Image (cartoon, rainbow, N blue to C red; front, side):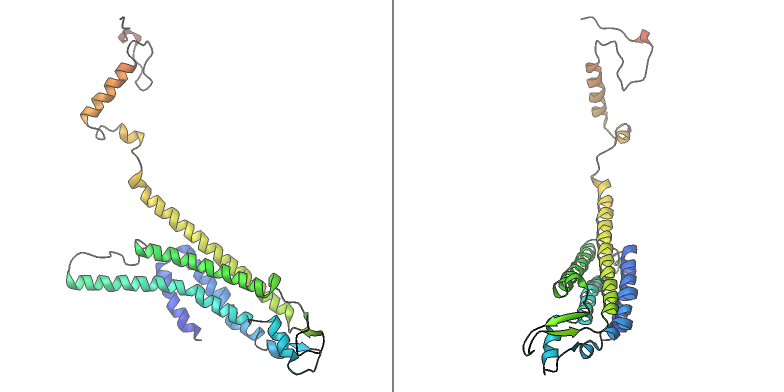
Length: 271
């Protein structure tokens, strides 16, 4: 697989991502893809050849290896990285679709804009971006579960016991370089968890930002706005003043919302 072409496609996502999205993309390429290409493939490259069992029975070593390694770590990681990065390509494709529609609209109409900023996360693009975040986090969580199902506790022992046919009896099998493999397993596990947290934080950031942008349009008028003479019409003003006069009629105390006045100007009404 040509990872350089794949990296070139995903590099365009930076233009349409938030700060959290750029951090996630850098983390994926530096700490996951590069580590996978440079070290992980070499560590697991001769895994089956170095899987040694203390028997000469033909086929016993292959059967035991298949029992304890149903799916190779490197192949699971490769599939995980492909599925995790594909949703980012959907965002780029959506922006390209918007640009194509904008170009067609300009050719037909010649004035105005269908999308003033095709890369701005509004409308359908906002939902595409949000769904991509959910999909990426879900894929990482699923693969973490798969690793735990295939390899409990995520680590590899130095020796395993096998008694599957055609092994004549219970044999001891030894895994090559278990300590080195466990280090890389823990490293890839931690980076996957960090990526999940970044996706959730970015999702929360987008939702809060969207809600804050929609809030001013639905927010009721404040007290300061109500006191503004341009806010209410004259009839409503008269009703407000009339109701306040009726409430405080015949009272020696001043209305709490009115300024203090000399006592001489307050006359008690005798009914």
